[in-house]
Each structure stands twice: as C-alpha cells, then as structure tokens.
Length: 271
Image (tube, rainbow, N blue to C red; front, side):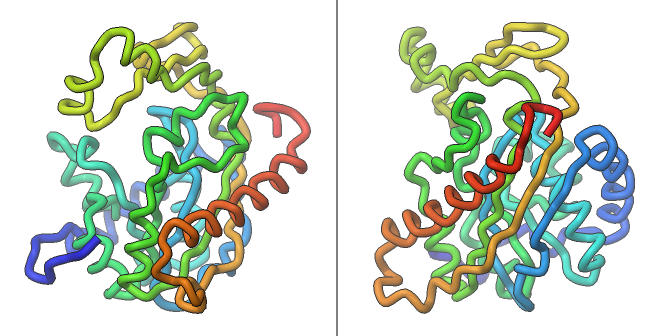
C-alpha cells in the first residue's frame, strides 16, 4: 500500500462534536440491546496502532459501534479512532457523515496519514467475505487471503493489535456467502463492477425469514463480546518482509483468542 503524501485524504474531516453525539446515541443500543463488552483496551499501546478485527453481523454489523463506545469511554476524544471502510459505503450523503465520525476510505493514503498523526486505526481485513461467514463457522478467522493490513503496518512501522469478537454472527442465521449462487446466475462480473464483491449472502432471520441480500432482517439481541489481545510488534520479526507468514501469524493469534472466547460462551444469542 504505497502512498502519495500529496493525495487527498479523509483524516482531517473528523468532527469531535459529531462523534461525541453519535457515540452518546449509540451507547444505549450496544450496551442494552447487545449487552456489549470490550475487554483488553489496555493492550492498545501509546501512539499509533493498527487494530485488526474479525468482522461479524452482515449488513447490520455493529462491530465498530461496540468498539467505539468503549474506546472513547476509556481514552476520550483527544485520541480519535479511525476505521477503514470500503468505497461503496461512501456513496451519497452518507459519505460526509462517515468521514466526520472517523470512518475513512480504505486507501494507503488515508491509513498512512492517520497512523502518522498518532491515531488508532481499526481495520477488518476480511470485509464482506468475513462479515457474511456462515454462522456454523462463526469462530473461524479467515480474511480470504487479504494481506493489505500487514503492508500498512510495515510501512507505518506500527504494532498490530489483534481484536477478536464473538456474538455478531448470531444476530441472524448466516447460511451461505452465496458465491455458488453468483456463479449459477452468472452475475460475477456485473456484481464485482457495481458492488466490488462476488457474494450473494443467504440468511434466515426476523421478521422476513429467508433473505438473499434483501430484505434486511432485524438483528437479534445477541450478546457481543470483543477482546483486544496483546500487541504484535511486527518489526521484531526477522522475516518482516514475508507478508504471508506475518499474516498467518496474526491470524493464528486471533484464532487462538477467538477459540478462548468461544469456550466462555454458554448459549447462542444469550451469551
């Protein structure tokens, strides 16, 4: 992810007042409806860091709000949190709102500028592939071979803080990513062009039951727990330029952490 220092970025658009307002409105949703917990925030070191998480919950994911509420409660608003998002979510008037609350386009320029400013940057490398993983595989870390986050951390010389989350994939029943359906309908090229994805997720939930992308079901009040693990100083690795091996190491640490979280969970949804 090389970057051009003269390129236009989204980082300077962060609005502290609007972010405080949004977090205040979000807090009762994540704390009462999802009974959210974020553990291990002390594992975020001083200075810049790249927090790498698994992504859950489909189109109605609450990963970022769950994390942001507890992050700002602990660190306050003098230390902005930025989250990298795909271009498609910035279409229309929502784009300005997202940038003002710290959600920035997932580009090398944006990530580099935020980290250079000493910020904490949150990224979900698995993106749509991860967020729509089948519920029966909810405790599997799989980024679909995406390693850009490793390059970002190496170029910025910042530690990676793994963050594992459980519960979001129980907000409805995720049956399949639907890649086979895309192939069967021969939609792959068109869908990739329009939406930058090659999935047609199949889910079952409330109140519409079976859904293929739409209609969007309401998420169940599942308990969501996120845990931050000790930071990984990738600069200490002798083979730091071996991106695939570093990625495998990070995912291995996350898989172990997610397995430990799953062992503490007694019942689906209830927690």
